[in-house]
Length: 311
Image (cartoon, rainbow, N blue to C red):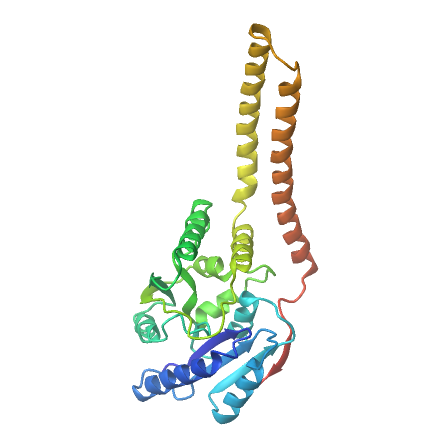
């Protein structure tokens, strides 16, 4: 029998957590009754430094159900770190990560277990339909995946963090010790046999999204700079293109100066290259600075998270 462990990261999920607990425990009991998983299977909620009643709700659920556990982080460390804390802490033959907002269909877990029984070590939950998302959110999310692929990052299109990982895959994940760990890009690098399960993304059951535009952009930028050095190479390529363009502008200005009258001699040839090249240099320095900042964080070897309490 498969010992299943569900890992559910939470941050200020007071409004939706009771419904999530009820739905996930009901699904666990059904799977146990169908002899698909062991009766010792568990659900672990990881509280990412919530400021509402998320942790008391987890404690209450754990007191009433021996199969429910909780991990409380001492401080909010972000969704990825909370997820890693759960994956690297819980025991089980198979671990499935799912968010507490109930937008990812828990019913897909049955299909994930079926793919695992067929030999897949990693099973990705893929959002086949995003009808509940706004047009802008759907467009930005899909643009992110396309951009990551364009830059050479191995990410699964329309896959977030709803996935099944075997104990073998989890043990391999533990070998990645970098602080800036972007799971959506790291997991495909493990190299085990994979499978995909498609589901329709539902609307949020209650509460507010914990990923506003600012955090989405931050996640995208962190993932981009954590997985690939392509932006650094693009700076070099862009510098060559800008140099050619600047040379062409200079030639045009010289021809214009000799063949036509110019109202303010020297203005264009001075101001245009200065502004243009200055902007490109600042952009290049900013991108290089981002990578240097990541090197700085990695060399300090600070912990990704600190666990305050485990139940």
